[in-house]
Image (cartoon, rainbow, N blue to C red; front, side):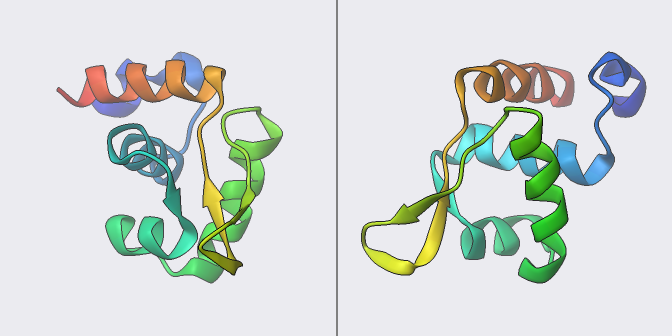
Length: 89
């Protein structure tokens, strides 16, 4: 079971889903992540806050659309996303 394989990371299923998508999709913006995860952008706000507070991602203004934020993974975020993707595989 996926949650059991990742239990030591203390991630919710929604956080696992977001990290998997960010890990395989390059730097996404909130809209793209919302579409990929099937989660409303407003619902993603608290999830992204938790991931950012844990040091897994950053929010930065998208230079192509200054009304939008890009969500690059940090070094720690890439490591956790790799664990998530390995558990999924």
